[in-house]
Length: 108
Image (cartoon, rainbow, N blue to C red; front, side, top):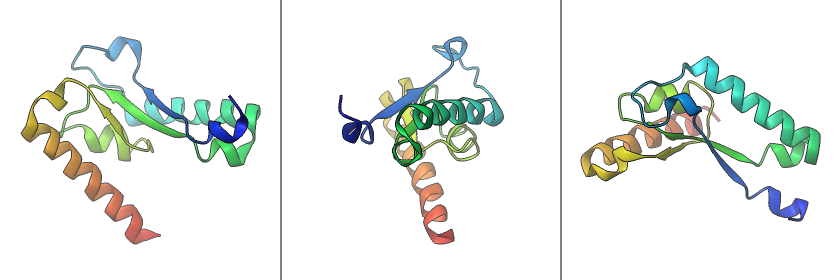
C-alpha cells in the first residue's frame, strides 16, 4: 500500500480480554494503546501520516460507556458491536459521540 493511502487507514481496537464481555478497560489503558499505535505509525510513516490515521474503540461500547471509551481516552470514535443491534441504544451511543464531537468543535 502506498504511503499516501495509509492516511485513510482506520484502526479499531479492543483488548482481547474485553471481547464478548461486559468488562471495559480504563480510559488510561485505552489511551496508552492509542499512543503506542500512533508512535508505530509515526516511526514507520512519519508524524504527518500518523496524525491522519483514525483509531476507534471497537466492541463493547454502550451509551453508558461511550464517553469513557471514546472521549476520555482520546479515541477518534467507536466501532459499535452488539449494541448496534438495539436501535434505541445505538441512537443513544451516536448522540453521545455526536455531542462529544460538537463540544470538541466548539473548543477549536
